[in-house]
Image (cartoon, rainbow, N blue to C red):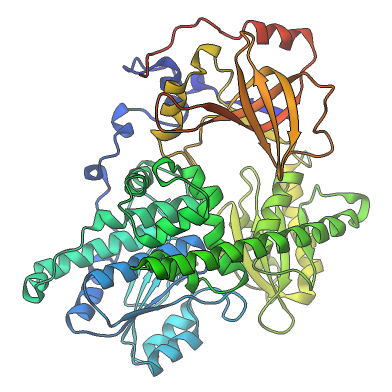
Length: 592
């Protein structure tokens, strides 16, 4: 276990803010340079200066005014589902019954808008297709829709290729000519901005007054934006944090849909205590399970449900999908480990590329992520594709190795082998010929070794350092847990320290025990997905742990517990001395 401590000093001397010094240091390390960035007022949201925004809002606005049939084409992940549900809620609030949606099924349709979907839309009398969280790479499908007389508005946040689709409007912050500054916005955030402008267009044209319909409160849709943004693991820059924090606030106050309330209930989460971590580890996986093993339409219908019975039914379906997903994940992980053990010399320094006809494409992304975390190398997991002699791959990366860039280079090196690829720096996907897997494996290993040089990286955990014992109090922990929208790019504070350890007990998927400070105060601790090779170990009484906090309620009377990210025995005198001199008595701000 290697601990890499975030160094505040490399950014210059700490500012003299009117905040507790520990909080000041935490925010400084995370790029906050002005306390104004800790104010999450909606007034501070960026202006909607996307390229093609004016065209998009006019096209969609006119379609509403002319009662043109609109079809939303979504995606089968949480970002796509929340974006689709947001669009449907918006049109429902307009009492616009001509809008419907279609989410491609991973195993039947593949990813995103296709020519077949365009043809089906034409047969159904659709006059406008709006893509959400997809479409930027659907060049042929968009062209086919246009040939059939259907207008197309693409809203996406993925990296475009050299050529943009010939749609009527293409709203994507990653367009090279797009001035919108938050390049990290999720797909659900993009459609939120677009529909905000559609509302303005309808208002400017007197539509709400003529129809006698109240204008939708766009901020009421930020619960979905929060859910999709956190689940898609996009970096939480300031603009994203504003939307996520407001959306989480809506959920905590029960100012959300009955669908989200029911999803929270089956997830065993308290709405009033919900955090971005709950979204990542409880709500998101249940939604994702529908798209992975069946049909994400169930997820969209749950999120957009307007009555409790429908919401309860759909949430129950999602819960059962997630149970099946866990079973499949366990079976597939065991098979993947068998394939890795059969690799020559068990050498993974060139990354991992594995394929089996028994792999499930909907689970491959989870397996790729778990293998990446375990072996600390980039991973590609391949499963059979929709077309004969094709495979689809889920790819996950470590450190600064760009998976999207690697796939683009391999596509150039193996023309005709890689049929399609796209995604992000850390996560991407591809479709390729099955007989090209050996060539892919060779080229991928070449790129990985050239980048990493030193071979497999040691498992590293980032930490904000040792926290003085005086800060192990509910008022401080409550502030950490509830007052900020932690997530990707704005990481939850994680500390490391030496503790006395006792009462080790194995639970379902975690180790439960107690960690004690030098002054005798003891706290319950949980180590999820612990390494069974080393724990439990009743002979160990002192450990160095990397941990974050949890608290039982959003109040200064809540009970503190520790969530351990990594742990190893601590035996030497130096660490024992650190434990006994752990900063007890250092003054702290009164958070009460």
